[in-house]
Length: 483
Image (cartoon, rainbow, N blue to C red):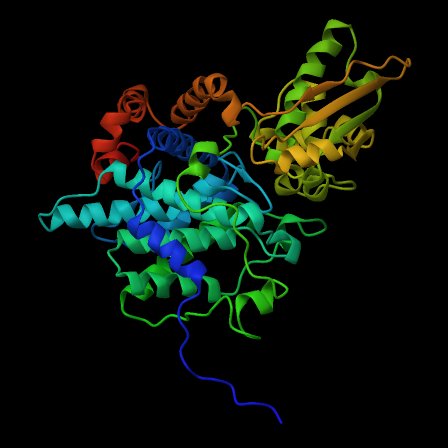
């Protein structure tokens, strides 16, 4: 005879408590974290500005109902839109992720923690404008940087030891959870209300990775994070009304997240929340390419120059072997037809073939006009990936966190070029001194896509000055980006 099920309300899962106590109680005192957050902010906004050149992105932007006007709403950088914070979060989140050019975190789970800026900036701008309208003090950009550090930390620390992709779930679940937690704090929710909000994020149905993998790879992967960060804002606002939460949302037998979606396994943690993730985050500086390919693309650029110097070209290549790590093979080692830009920027063979042929890899190189060149697919067919177990170990080693690739090219005349190996991409913490000037140059380029010189300079004067940026009211900073 089965025993009755207890209906005693449990205490909140410790995972929820740890997240909420972190956002409420932990003081971030790392100058490096704030400096990196500023660089992350400008890089992320720049990625969004570049995405505005692509109609596939801009068709999704604006209010849900055309013509909707929101008094003191959040403004969307680079556009004329002023929206409610939920829809503004979607707009900003979709823009910044569209071209796969914002930051990256690689661990048991992969992701792009700056995706959370969609919800953070939308809510901060909305709160700031309403505060000023009510005669109160606005939020400052220091508040935005703090929220970014916290969101990076929540998403990244959970990702260190817990693979959502291995159970078929998309990493944007962590964007939703992180955005919910930090936005709920920004909205002034109590500890219990934030616990409720975070539980609502976990109890949501979570996105499948279907749209990231063959044979269904498609453009939802470009707006999935915008959807997740906007959902985080929505759930925080729901919790703000006093709506109840679900304290054992993770651990409840049969009906909880662990049993339903995580094969009955509880989350594991490597370290407590602090500012580790922001300090160690990876920037995509040189190429708009899935991060596991970044070092391979850099190696391909080197080989392109070597071939030219030898009077050879990509058409003289017989075969290419990419020595790589397991995650690269699992995500972007792809054969067969590539159907759209989203398919191409998740194929390492494509991302190596283009720079070998042309000496470049830009967002435009994923579009149909470039992909139609038959030499690309011909070269793709000559590229093979093999796992190097040491590269895989170094990828997971918290002291290294390498993303290594090595390319060996054999020519049709039998010549084998010396292997070109790159362990750390230019956006890695180990290459910060080399990378930050290039990151700032990338930001300048993206500003020039959208704004006249005077407006560019006004943005740069604030954005490149840590103290000036941190002290600036959020709405004043966002206004610098208004079209």
